[in-house]
Amino acid sequence: MSIQVAILKILASHVSGRAALDSLKHDLAILSSSGDDWHARIKRLASRVPDLDIFSSGYVLRDVEGWEITSAGREFLRALEAVTQDNLPPASTEAVSRSQGALIVVGHRFKNRMRAQRDPEQSTLARRRPIREPH
Image (cartoon, rainbow, N blue to C red; front, side, top):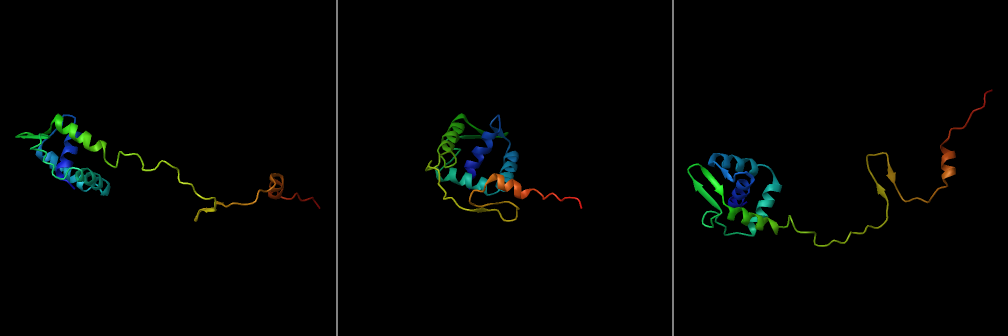
């Protein structure tokens, strides 16, 4: 995971674009433990810019109060996210066709199998209980 891309993402998530160093560390700790989706997304973004230096590029400014993403940093992040796999359309828009077959759901009482069509009138009669005549 590129820490610099993660810092850009965190700073961009703040309305003001600013965060104190302690707050930034806290956000990084939370996100780094948030699961594989976050790591995979940051890794995809970072793979596009392996030599990124957010400070020398002018994307983030540091001062005694904390760190701040610049307008150039926001624009860079927007451009970076615009062309990742997350935002690309699927490679093929053709629908995958499935052959007709039996669908059996295990553990449920319903089964959907291809059967010969029954006469609906006959099915209704078969489900009725026979009427018993009194003795």
